[in-house]
Image 1 (cartoon, rainbow, N blue to C red):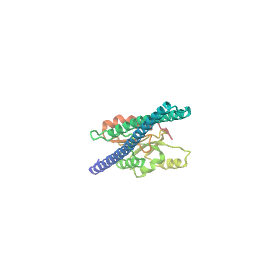
Image 2: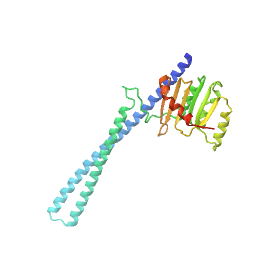
Image 3: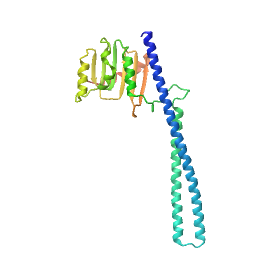
Image 4: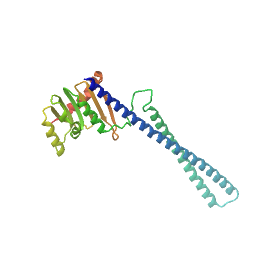
Length: 259
């Protein structure tokens, strides 16, 4: 790799890192907002409980006075019902407080563990990295390929964003992705890509990952998460990393169906 390419790759890595830090900052601000909202809710519930306790005390005194003064049974029953209602509301408010405090504790614990200053370990559970960012990164890596590239994307439609026509004809591209011949666009794209001598395609129906292994020396891997635009992403040139991950890299190709 030339010095210019190394500098370009370093800039891209720094940009990705900055984007991740900005996302973490946004996540922390969101959690702070949720914490403040919960604390306000708990404060309101505390005030409600205090008001209910005072109302209950007054009703119990009123009931005691009426009972001692020979009040009729219907009035006593009415006061007792009001006391029972207040007791029910008080119990419900206590449950709400307990639930809010538990949720608050979870949020505080989560917020303290995200992007803490004493660790480089990132929690990707709530990090937002979009499909567009992933495909752009893959395209940038692909531009410097020389010999062989392994690619996996959810759908053959995603390949349009990689500009495969611009890749050197000497680079052998092995690609695994969902290909549904019943979809006209898939059929058209398949025909176009098969017209290129350096592309081999297999239909992989997992739709669960983005992979680009370039010349067996640079790996980009993104796992699709459960939430919208939540991807577990890593990018490495470490040979040991690549060796360990090679089984997952090859899995989509080996499980793919020949067209």
